[in-house]
Image (cartoon, rainbow, N blue to C red; front, side):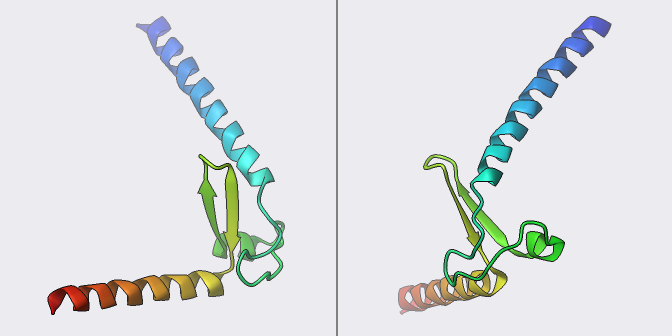
Length: 91
């Protein structure tokens, strides 16, 4: 059983390593400003790193970065749109 466990751990390690490498590739594509308002983004600022939103489209190989203000506006527009559709469907 010991060698089977080691084999499974090695396999899992290799899969995790590959996944991390893919994610690091996308991190390299991360922009230095908000896609919407062009506010500057500092990758070394922990507050910005934790508060900004990143959208990754793996199929297209695109990484988009949004500041909290623009992200909140987008979410409110989506919520308003959902409410309007629900109200229209209720009538």
